[in-house]
Length: 203
Length: 264
Image 1: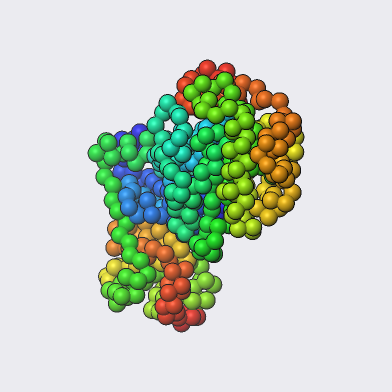
Image 2 (image 1 turned 60 degrees about the vertical axis):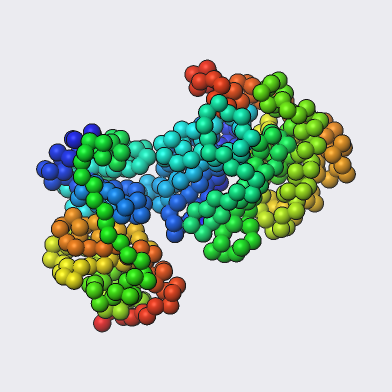
């Protein structure tokens, strides 16, 4: 699909799945796009766990081969795939279409400014139980699409996971639903590595 | 570190991915047209890594490279040693230059002999140790054998050394630059088994160590460069089909259409 076609479909409610890695996504992406990790082995399973099957979807991969393959995999599995973005972010911007950033902060900044955020953990409950940022709550990656509308975002939400894969997905869902959300880069791996305080259990 | 070897069996060729899971970035080394640019794009994406650099150990003569295309679709540099005489632009490096993805360093180790620009890549995973872990030896050192020094004959643009001089350079390079590395360092070659880029003693095994090759690489057991050159000549396989044409394409001298399917 050309950038103009993708934009028109977005305005009709289609979701762009951005298959790039988290850092380039946070730096710049199509307005309203959702960050989804690509992998031929389990992309279909993961998308099924996160989104409703009838959601109209458009793939954005870079290089373009990734978008094409993802579109085929999901389409073959019965998802409502409308196509993939041709020409990537470059073509999108050349057409003057809107790009946005996902604000992000690292774990040092999060620790410093912990009281300015509502920290939300995108992992599964068993991982959260094992150790999480004190005061944080769960918005698991498999529930986020359905629960994001009711998420409180004052103070703004800081989303964390093990590294960045699930947190960027949840943060992008929150942002798409108009919530104020930031991505914690480095995730719990960095938090634990720095020996920052950990809370255990489900309270 | 994420380290992956890709083997293209029709030509017994090995290419590599070296990446950092934390930075989510990777380098590709010696990509081959037989697998194709999209193959590497999807393999890296499956590992959650973006390709940020494409390296070649040298300008190849026995297979068609897809390094230019892979670098172009990823919008990243195509790295070659500064002596590589291509007609197209590339990002030149010098001996000792270091390129990093996250915690992983790739150090350029100039290893001329097989070709005048040949470079091996020393891989260090700083999340484990400051010591190097592996070396991608290209067509300099194979498992059980060495790269042949005679594939440039007839290539006027590159004929800066005759076959004998190249063999001598190759012997010196392996002795002084590769066998001086820590003994535990793993060796990953550009070819194995039946590849025509080396001699009859090339092993089908796809990796080795400095320790093992120092002791048991037959060509390198020769006492001096002269005996080494003679051994390499006597144990060489036939020349690869169309190697002059393939080399010309990899240098940018002819178009892909002019290959008529050679070297893939």
